[in-house]
Length: 376
View 1: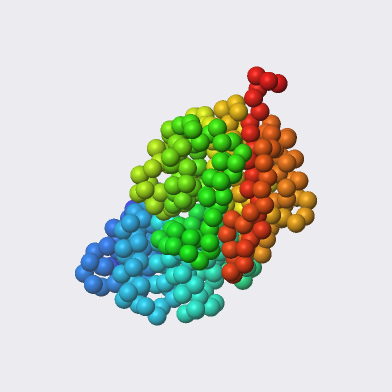
View 2 (view 1 turned 90 degrees about the vertical axis):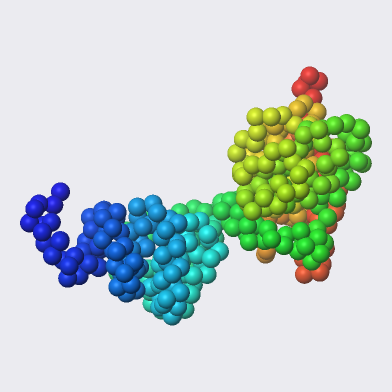
């Protein structure tokens, strides 16, 4: 706690240099006092850019994210060519979880001042949050050692671990599809010839025609905007969906065909409910190792239930990451995982779930049946 003389010195400093006083308060962990000191100066129009940036950071430090973002936007408008203003706005956007705009603003700060180490560190943090470890490592490596923050080594190690995972990072998938949600259907159906939902619907008719006369409880993994839900809606007694992207789920919800929708990772336990049919149309391309997914689906299906999925075909014997950061799986790998998990392979069909650069993508459509436990 400050003594009386220290407080008196602080009051004197406030009168002569409120910015320095606010920075001292921030360093002492007293962000709310720093914000209270600076706010009147901003309201009176007596604040320069450094004072405004410090006020933004004080608001962020005390959890006033919305106010900080408003202040940062105002500062960036007043000082459009100043790197510090772009950096503060990037920090506020990152704190608010607005990754695409945060990344764009931090990149703008570095275009203005390529030597701004703090902006480079924050951009690395943003790429890490977005599940882009290679880009994060590139930015972290560009921070001069003498200007590195205390947690840079820890964040670098985290990015290295993320890069080694046999799946796309969940934040990367969410970031990707939040960006694409506005025009996803037009892009997929028009530009990429997306056919995975219809392929699975045809596979169901061929392999398990008895399903077509029933009213089924269906779970749609990676449901996106609901294109698979449309294909299977008429078979559903109950139709639920899971996806990592809130923006995609908002589009799916607007269709009015789903009973329940959740933001979730399909590697975690899927639901307390049991289903007759689980769908994964063009979803497993963001995972290499499918062991957890197969286990979760197996535990979610009723005995005799079916798991219908599409993958991109791996010409090798296992799985590999393709040039478009989409995982490919071989038939032998899928059969081995199915057998290990307790599925019977009802069918494997060669297909093309989508196109890429105008050329059909080699894929597989697979129907797995959960073994009837009563039969052993």
